[in-house]
Structures are given as structure tokens and as C-alpha cells.
Image 1 (cartoon, rainbow, N blue to C red):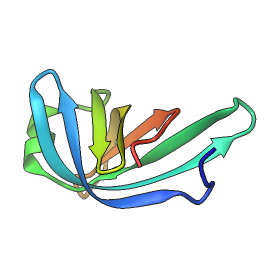
Image 2 (tube, rainbow, N blue to C red; image 1 turned 45 degrees about the horizontal axis):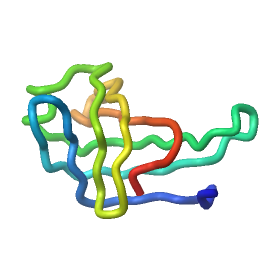
Image 3 (cartoon, one colour; image 1 turned 180 degrees about the vertical axis):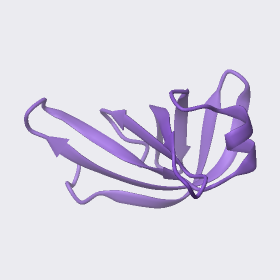
Image 4 (cartoon, one colour; image 1 turned 90 degrees about the vertical axis):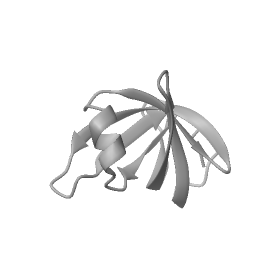
Length: 92
């Protein structure tokens, strides 16, 4: 089981059918006892290549030096950062 305070900040890759993009991320997660799953989420640093290639709702694999997990990009904030989230084993 993951530490409820688990987090990762650093280099990552977003992988999809079009290839791989190197990005910076800040990720956190927690175990949700109501559904019995680990929920992870965070932000992808503002990056023109990510913004040009992805829209809110895009499915990607987030890869860090500690692992990889499927996630979904959502809500682009005013600073150009996408939110990313996933369920289950996190990529950190």
C-alpha cells in the first residue's frame, strides 16, 4: 500500500500513440477507503509541445524513474499547466 503522503516532483514522460514528450510534473496521491483504490493526481508544467499536442481529456501514460501508469489530462489552468490524474498504481 502507498504512503498517503506520497508525492513526486521531477522529470517524467507523457507517452501516447504519437510518441513521447519529456515534461516536468508534480504528483501526489492518496488511498481512498470508500472505493478501495489509490488516486493520484498532479500538474504537468507548462509546455508548448504538450499544449499543441494534447487537449483536455487526452489519455497518456505517465512515466517517471519509478514507474509508469495510465492517466488522463484535464483542465488546462491559466498558467498553461494540465492537470493529470489516474487510479491504481501510480507512476511514482
